[in-house]
Amino acid sequence: MKKKIVIIGGVAGGMSAATRLRRLNEKDDIIIFEKGPYVSFANCGLPYYIGGDIKERDSLIVQSSAALKKRFNLDIRENSEVIEINSEDKTVYVKSEGEIYTESYDKLILSPGAKPFIPPISGLETTNNIFTLRNIPDVDKIVEYIDDFEPKTATIIGAGFIGLEMAENLANRGLSVTLVEKAPHVLPTIDTEMAAFVNEELIKHKINVITNVAAVKFHNDTILLETDETLQSDLTILSVGVQPETTLAKNTGINLGLRDAILVDEDYETSIEDIYAVGDAIVVKNQLGKDALISLASPANRQGRQVADVINGLPVKNKGAIGTAIVRVFELQIASTGLSEHQLNLLGVKHEIVHITSNNHAGYYPGGTSITLKLIFNPETGEILGAQAVGKEGVDKRIDILSTAIKANFTVFDLPELEFTYAPPFGSAKDPVNMAGYAATNLILGQSQNVQWHELEKELSKGKVLLDVRNDSELEKGKFKNSKNIPLDELRTRLDELNKDTEYIVSCQSGLRSYNAERILKQNGFKVKNLDGAFGLYSKVSNKLLD
Image (cartoon, rainbow, N blue to C red; front, side):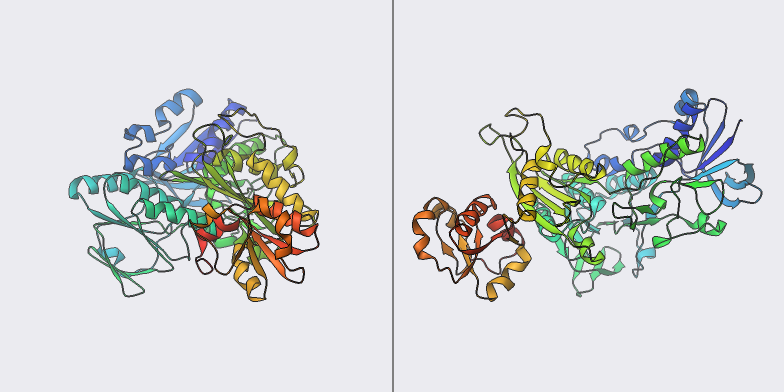
C-alpha cells in the first residue's frame, strides 16, 4: 500500500532515512522539510573550511536538493519550517516564504538534530563578534567577519570537539587563540590523564588554555571571567555543547526524557503512534542500557536507515549507541569509545583500568610514533566498558577495533586472540590492542596488581616505597622524589637491597618493564604493585611527586 512519509529535518538522520525509504519502495511519497537552506551538508567539515583545509565552500554541500530529486525522486522543501504537528489529523503546519500551509502524512519522522547551547552570559545579545557554529549560514557569518574585520585574537568558549577543532583552524589562519573551558580539563568527554596529552599539544602550538573557569560577561571585545580576569577578543566562538532541538516534539505532546530529548522505543517510534525520531534529538541506550545523548554523525546515519527499514516492515531494531568519536588537535589524534572512567564512577559501576604505550608500527621501522591506550573493563567478567587513545598515528584504527569489540560483546580475554594485518610499515606483531588485552587479563588472573596515577600519592603516604627500574640515562630526564632506583636488568642480582617487609610500587617509563619487575619480585617473596602507565603517564598529569 502506498504511503505518504514526511520527514522533518535533513542532514544525517533525515536524509539517510529518505534515501533508504526510496530504495525500499519506489511508490511512496517522501517529503523532506528542512528549515535551513541546505538539506544535505557536511557539518563536521565546517571548522576545516574556516581553517582552509577545505578550500571550496561547495565541498561542504554533500548533495543538492536537485540532485537528490533526480536520483531518488524525493520532494525536498528547503527553507520550510514545520511549526506545528497535529497528530490526531496526521497533518503538519509548514511556514515557508511567509506563508503557512498544511501537509498530511501517514508516517512522520522527526530528525530535528541539536542546537548550540547558549549560556546565559551578560552582554551576549549586544556583542556583534560572538558566533556559534552548527551549519553553513553560521560558517558564512564567521568567514565574512574574518574577511571584513581581520581579527587578530580569538577566544573559544568551550573545549569540546568543535572548540578544539576551531582552536586549531583559527590558529592556522594566524589568529592568537585562547580556549576557555569551565570543566577541570579540555575535552571533558575523556578522562583527566588522557586530556593532559591534548593540553600539552595545545600549549605546544601556542594556544592559551584556561580551564576550571567560566566566562561571565561580554562587552564589545572584552570577556570577563569569573576569576575577574579579562580577555581581549576580536572574535569569540561559543562552543559549550549542544542540546536536543525538541520544541516541536514537546509542543506535540511527545514524551521526552534525558535533557528533554525524545524518548523512542526499539522501533524508533515515539509515544505517539506513527511518529518516529532519529538523530541528535533522541535518547539512546549505551552498552549498559543506561539513557544517554550521543550527538554524532555515524549513529544518526544508522538510525535514519534503520527507521526506514522499520517503516517498511524489515526486522531491524534500535540497539543504542556507544559514542565512538575522534578529533584531531594539530599533530595529535584523540579517540574514545564506550564509557569513560568518570562516567563509570558517577554510575557506581565497578571497573579496572590499564594503560599501555606502544608504537603505531614496528619500532625498528623508521617513522614510528607512540600510542597511549586506556582500556576500561569489568574486573570480574572482563566486559569491555570503554577505551581512549592518543597519539600521532594509528589511533583511529585501535579505537575502531575496540568499538567493534564492545558491540560484539567481546571481553578482554578475546583481545589477545584478535589477528591483525602485520608488516613493519603498518603495525606490530603484538598490536597495542593485543597488548592492552594481555595487561587486562593479567589483572583479572591475579598475575599483576596495579596502582593508578591518581592513587600514587595516597599509597606512598602509607609507607610504601616507589621502585623505579629505569636506566640512569632515563632518570636524567625526570624522576620521582624519594624513589629507589634499580635498573630492571640488574634487579635479580640486587634483591638483597630490598626489604620483604616493605611494600613496593614499581615503575618504569611506560609500565612494561615495571610489570616484568613485578613478576620477578613477587616470585621472590616481595609485596609489590605496578604503577599503571608508569612515569610517562604520571609526568603528563602531575608533578607533585616529581623531582
